[in-house]
Length: 246
Length: 359
Ligand SMILES: Nc1ncnc2c1ncn2[C@@H]1O[C@H](COP(=O)(O)OP(=O)(O)O)[C@@H](O)[C@H]1O
Ligand SMILES: [Mg+2]
Picture 1 (tube, rainbow over the protein chains, first blue to last red):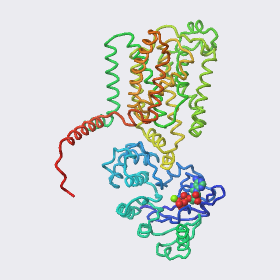
Picture 2: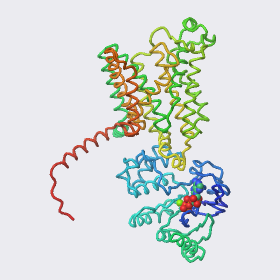
Picture 3: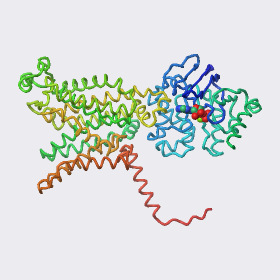
Picture 4: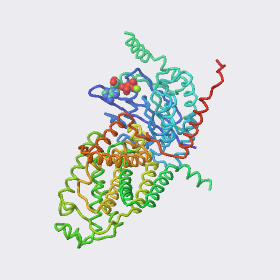
């Protein structure tokens, strides 16, 4: 019997020199579910993840994790409160071994090394990187680096996992493997997942709900089916495609 | 038993380094040639400095310009603490009375030197570790100048620009230097492998990612900077009690440059790299000095050639192989075994292979 935790964002906003990259975004995510965050390029998805984790200072809004207001926490304490993430542009510890990278994910939030090593071995096996344990992270292929980054995030045993375009640069086979891995994860590890990606096939079959951003603002939220047929969403995507073709 | 052998294997780096260093020490001691023993003792003291330097710079990725300042503080503070009061008032007539009265055993004096350096580092590092990398480097550089000026001008403490002569016998013996150096290898290695060391190394590779995994980067840097200063100060204390006469100039640019070249050439990211860098640069330094001496005797003006060659070597490494010789790797039994296996594989591959029939 484990209790359900929630991640609540209220009125989050971020301005870059007048440009509102994220504008009054509110959303809720509970452990056990997968929420997809979609929107055209530059709509503020990465910025939203950066401000909720405290890596960038936010202009407005609050972030509450399982009842604790972490809005004013420095980034490292937000991580300790249960938010783990990956980066759109993979950010591994290049000169550490794969094992050390995952260990650090646990050690970073205060786990002792002895326990961290056990966790890291398990996670490397889970994502299929056991054979690369002693390789340096920079020696891995692109796809393996993506998997290592997810393992590192999970090593913290977070309440919520934020994935920023984990399928970008992966081939179809690798994307399918990612889907198979992520789908049962919320129930298995009792976490909530917030995932950003442009691969609609992946997002449709993976996410319980979708949250759509355009120009930093929420334009729709609902089940994949509902969102797919939302006129505003179609407009945003068609609009951006029309622009790309222009 | 199994657990013990596992542990030995897992920690093979530290045992191998200690074995190499201690066997080397025994050979030097057994040879019993005063000149070589002298060079080795100074080398062992330098090794302690290198280990202290590597602990901060190697793990955090930040160049520690101020490091030799703490070596100097340790050298003077421990000398003031250990000297006989009568000797002090004779050698340094202007010294403050309170300082003249202090007198404690050598090991205690070393510890006091380390504590004073650590306290100063702890105060200074508070704002220092918050600065961005570029500003921080300039600030550390300025700090080194401040420490140097204080050591060179505060004559009531350090005898000012005149030489500070300790007098008496050498309290730092060959074996004292060797044992403390061995201990410094152990400390540097286990710090690097500790959870603090791991977090610091993570922040070196990617500060944002480390923060996102819960690391308080500033706090980790702070701790390493203070410990590094303390180790530097112990090396300084051993140095002053070996050389027996010191000036502020002993702990300035040329010393910093020497330590830096050892760490850069050997490879700052691993303890093995720093260790072998120290061995190599010490040997190269001695060889080059002989050569310089020889050229000078032939009538050529070769003064400074040693520094120039080492500087060029360091620049070449920074450009061509920034990870140094070791490139972040540690010497280990597993690594040595792996290397043997690879060589064997290579030999087998060179034998003619069956033509590949599969498509
Ligand atoms: N550090 C920054 N400085 C200035 N503008 C930024 C910065 N980061 C992002 N932006 C701008 O904010 C907007 C949202 O970017 P981003 O969050 O990366 O979008 P997405 O991840 O949805 O593609 C874009 O217009 C981008 O140019
Ligand atoms: Mg993005």
